[in-house]
Length: 429
Ligand code: DI6
Ligand code: FE
Image 1 (cartoon, rainbow, N blue to C red):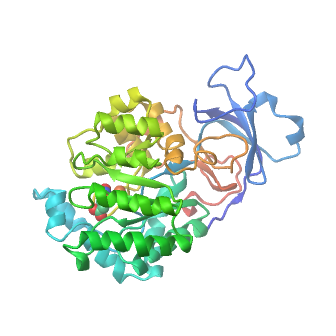
Image 2 (image 1 turned 90 degrees about the vertical axis):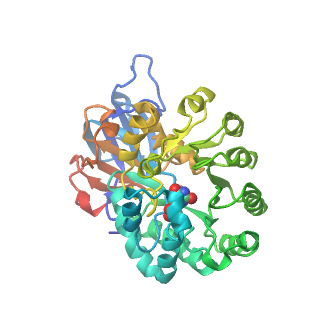
Image 3 (image 1 turned 60 degrees about the vertical axis):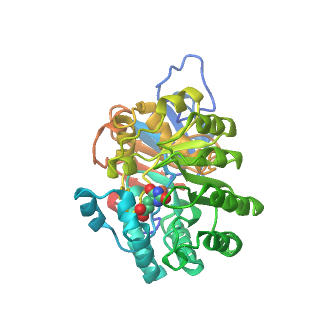
């Protein structure tokens, strides 16, 4: 299950680029948008992208792979997940079907806290074994970078366990994993009624310890009526800032708390959910360059009716990413392509917006804009060749995992198209 695969070094010819997701080094004046391109990979890095018939002679000695006109996108990026946890919460699914709301389930002792119990009870190896098949499902669709949050431990040793598993998953599967410390996800039962004391613990003990262990790439907070206040959120942001760690926020999911504007003031990488985002929040995100992360899986699961303000975000030029928000409570989703579909159908994104949302803009939401989310020279080779006739198909099928050829971290990890005819079985991704 580890990153088996053959080296992707070679000249990948006859690829059909998705406009905006492939950046040629050489643009010949007579090459129209949509003309075939070649991508040269050497030592696991993309080193040349350009017109198919203009590959420099210097690369003639490399293996030559014929893409046969397959559509090429960068490796997908899932920029918001809670992938590592114990147990599952299908019982809440049934409760909601019987009429309970997410907030009612949470107030009744279910919700995040029930996943906390199961996560605390699990060993690191058990959490790894539970998360591995979920990660594999995402990888089989071409995910090459993923964010994984803590937030189901809510105590130092258990948050550490989650983050260590996230790191181990990245190493075992050869995929870029960005870890996010979400200690301020919910109030643990032992701190009931002592929100300030728990926030102090998060800021003064948990975050510094985990950061010192190299386990924290970013810091997140659930800023909501049923979670942490604006003032508590700011306290966590200050602690992160002191350590030089970037922040992001679960913001305006159930109500307008003003979290996005606060996050933007701290230069947040992203504000996520944002169904109830105000015009002020949009303006603040726009000027800070903060990415709006749309999570249609949670919107769908909760049968939410408040749409995120897509038209206003678009008009303001705020980059929009799309992610699974994979978690056991509100988004048990394991398909980023399905999220692209739902972002189009439910939120009315255009297909190019949805595709940028699961690649380029998602990479930006993780601070990976210089290495992921675009096929371009100087980046690690992460790309996917799709067996589809047009780009819209990537957002069109419901629940179909196309047998793609996947290059991840410079290795051919799946070869559904038979381009190289040397890589392993697609299911081994
Ligand atoms: N927002 C979410 O969508 C998840 N966490 C959060 O802050 C839900 C987490 C859960 O219900 O377990
Ligand atoms: Fe989330």
